[in-house]
Image 1: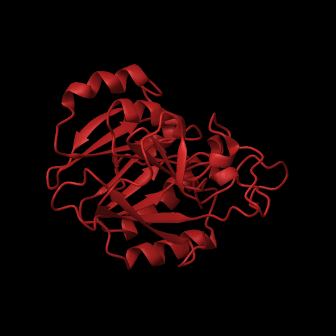
Image 2: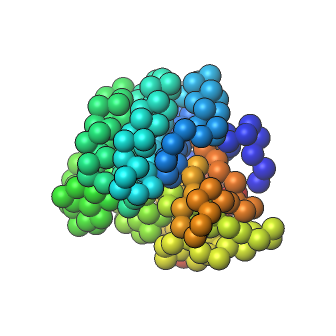
Image 3: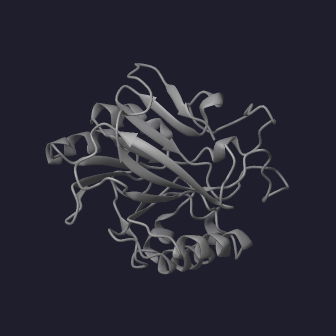
Length: 267
């Protein structure tokens, strides 16, 4: 699926359980920038997002590359967060490349860090569920499931996680939509979409896009940065960086219920 506006990738999503008043909710999804310094794409992202009407901005981890990148990554992420003014706020979780020291550097840049737990928005019928990769409950599925008593009926349930492997947990919690990254869409692909590696337990041909498991959708971003290519730190092939902008609409949830994985949107 081609990118319509440079890095910005508009996506319409229909959800059967979308509560009244959330028709047209617009969510920007920023993932895996792996910031090691100022890059042209970061300025492009800021210019495009700062001019858009947004309701929410979600961040799903891997803002830095390695331990000595923390200060540069914090500065870059703060610049992005400062430029965007979504109506309902900015929320995020950390990924496997992020450090505890980095999390402290970005604790007050305008992003509400969810940690591992449930957060209800005061001004909209939305509950956010976070899965963090750092901190005392990092990667703890039991911790998030124990928070199930905080889930409220009639609200849109949105989960943020770095790893797409949290999809079964999201389905167990009747989450409507899970936002994830980590895979970079494979980062290096063939023209036919064949992916060599996605660094997780998803089938390689399902490394990005919108998938469905039971009644839950997952949106897996290709992300904005690169990692793991020896001697070449800024290389992607047939898997360009992107920042999806989801517009939610009331309607039949994409795809059909399945105990396996179904891809309903490819990118």
